[in-house]
Length: 385
Image 1 (cartoon, one colour):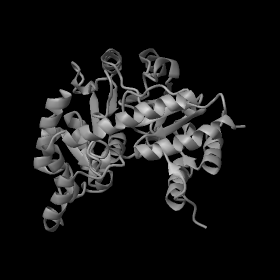
Image 2: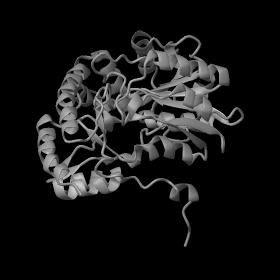
Image 3: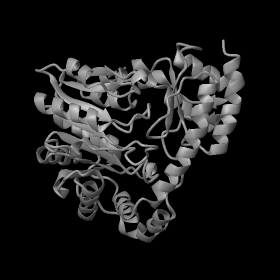
Image 4: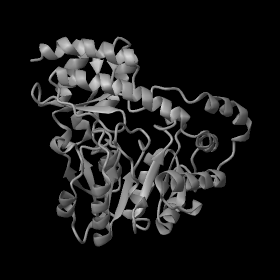
């Protein structure tokens, strides 16, 4: 029998895939697990899809369509204070593909990348596919899950460390990094000649006094930063699979050249719709944010009242709850929750070892369904053994 590669067999067996299947196949389960907006794409996007359907059957350039990259360049300068010529932008099948390509272009076997723990479940397997060596910086609840620059310094190996990954606003914690922390991380990158991979997929989904700052906008950081963006969260276009990376010229060229050997290009129709989305402005995303905020203000206090310690998230659409006073094993907790309360969420262990003892609840779900889920959770928590 022909064997699979060790690389594939060593990929983590995440619970979220099983949970998504349960949510689809068992309609009685209320899922607070989704990592995507529950809103449809804007009506203008749907209308434009029909309008251009007969004009999108050809490949686009590997780097992306000229008019889209020009629009992204203007958007980055205006909204993120990031200067990136269109030639420094590569449009991809979601920002996850951009991250994969950037990894292939920067990390050789056994070279190190530093990443937060807990963090988005898709990060670590991406680096392991290329046999890169991950080094973790633990995020702590008592500091609001902010990355500690001193811990980053300790994790650096002068000979092997090539990249530092940051994610702000963050999945699963909802943290938004402050300018002070970003400036300290920028100094570390310059001093140690590191690339920073900055995942900013939730850039516009922020609350209260939080402010999103792109580290690539800081003085001297344009040559060290690869900034990853997506239309999935801010435009509710997950299924269209379109994102992009803005990177220093040499890295951008390498990513573009490598793109030919993965998907060749992002879908032409999706790129044209992404352009339409940029032209529409922020009216639709602001409408979504207002509703996310309403859900957030209802969900988090109720979780805390139940005894699930849950900091108020400043960004994204997740509440990251500490369940350790009830159960140390997050997988076991979630499976019992599904069976007895008929509510699904994602166990913290899926986000890394430091996520154990936690559960991620998504509020990218209808307000009334969240209320119903909480009503089911309350007696479940009270009786939990």
